[in-house]
Image (cartoon, rainbow, N blue to C red; front, side, top):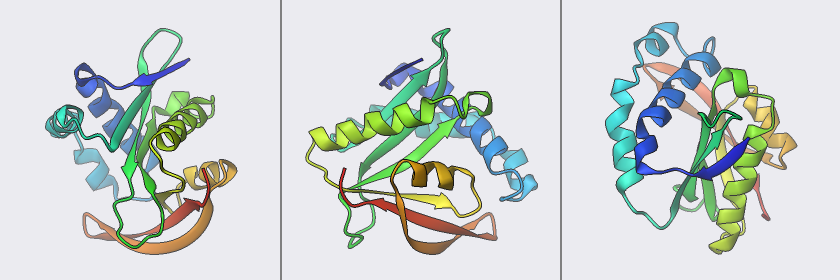
Length: 168
């Protein structure tokens, strides 16, 4: 099990992990028809763009299993919500289903927190679907529920919970 900074060449596997994770994680929370139409190909260009931006306030880390295969990722940076009162934000954390519950998520979050600290960020925020079991993971990692909002995904209203860490 290892964590490293994502490289541009990781874009195909990041697109795969992203799509496969959505299909397994959000089944039952988001309409099956929407999840079934998601493709790796539809995410390739987005990952190419994200990994080539060179944004100093954007970090992407990948987790690799014992065989060196990428099995998850975390991405975060400066808080995107003006006036939220938090410095940084976890934008995405996804693991392939078979690697969940094995410590990869904890390592990814701790790695991102370290990057935030090293760059002067003292607090952070994450949005998670209210019915997502990962909500409990974030609470165990020290996040506190502070807000809720409704998100529209493919015409379906889903409730999100905002969790915050006041001090990293």
